[in-house]
Amino acid sequence: MTREQFIQLVSDEQEALRGFLLALCCGNKDDADDIAQDALVKAYLASAGYQNKGKFQSWLLKIAQNTFLNHKAAQRTFESIEEAKTVLGTSDADAKYAYQDLYLALATLPPKERAAIVLFYLDGHSVKEISQITDTSEDAVKKQLSRGRDKLKTRLKL
Image 1: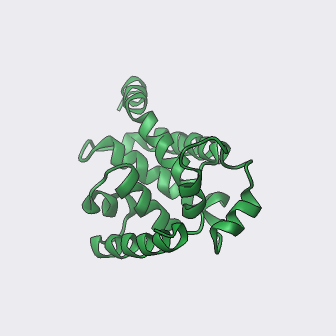
Image 2: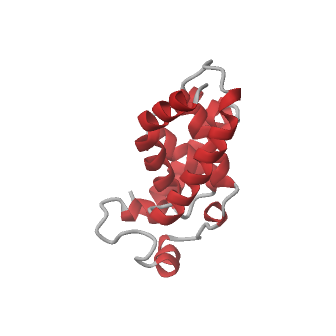
Image 3: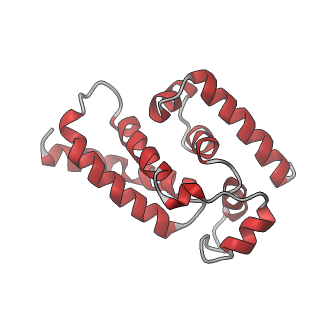
């Protein structure tokens, strides 16, 4: 893949990448931008290995998810929305942002459940695509989705 091809593919997927990472980082734009930058560098360095066998977006999101899991933002989970509000306050999530309550609830999920929920419900990926992105079985993705849904229902009192 040439540099120009990589730039074109990234520019086509940049919005999806940033939205995915913003949701994984529970609205923390700074963390999302840091992880996006790291993921793009890793993707560029690995671009010679991209074989055009699948969707570029899935390949890029896989790198982004792995970068997220290795980042400090993934290590931070909370027991409740109240704890997330106390710790995160309004500095990590814009108080005017429409999804603040969802981001606070997502912050209570373990990183792998959070990724599955974001990829399925916010990004619209299939279970099969999520299993490829996250390097897990489809059954594991289904379990992560089920557990994540149950926790979000409880925490959001739906």
